[in-house]
Image (cartoon, rainbow, N blue to C red; front, side, top):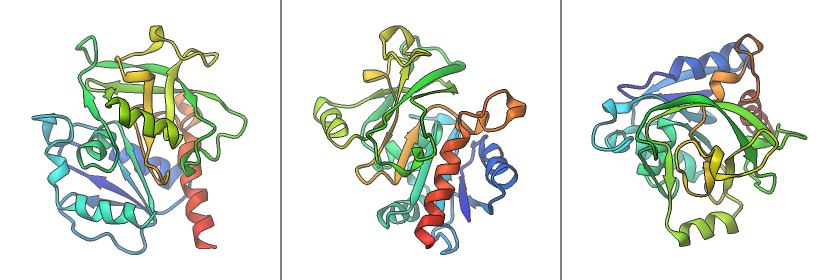
Amino acid sequence: MIGIVVFPGSNCEYDCYHVVKEVLKTDGCFIWHKERHIDSSIKALILPGGFSFGDYLRTGAIARFSPVIDAVSQFAAEGKLVLGICNGFQILLEAGLLPGAMLKNKNLKYICKDVYLKINKKSTSPFISEYKGRDVVKIPIAHGEGNYYAYPDTLKALHDENSIVFRYCTADGQVTDDVNPNGSVENIAGIANANGNVLGMMPHPERCSEDILGNRDGLAIFESMVKAIRQAAL
């Protein structure tokens, strides 16, 4: 069972549920932000995109104080999988489950478009295990505050732990300033914690997980989650 945490203002929860239930044929359920307990049947969590609490103060700053966050933190501490997408990533940063912070996009505008991502194959995060033979993928972004920032010592730790999982790049995998859509430091699009079981990413893999959408590059992230859950059950 994969749980999808819903906050007031979430708007991508049904997209994630559709991928889990209809594409992967896996059980999924919604978890309201006021829940204080995560059922033992739930083996992975998704914090979906949206505008939790209207994005007042800072993105994710209010959602971070929802009762469910303590349960999510405990869930992650037990080594279980937690995926934060866009606003979910922002919430994980505010909650301290991932390092760094989000700033407004460099151009101060909302951006919605396809981008290319360079996959760090040195990362041991289970979320990318099914990207076999793939170094570059195309996944859409849709955000106004996706400009990832971290202090130099934090960046060094991320590099040392191979925790920078995705970076914005060209179609052939070149990481350049020209293709950085939001000003994110070092073109960072997604990071994991030191153990790899918590992943935050600004692009939306649920929006490119079926042929009918014209792109399936995001599906492997969810397939990787399911694979890790099944392997843990062996």
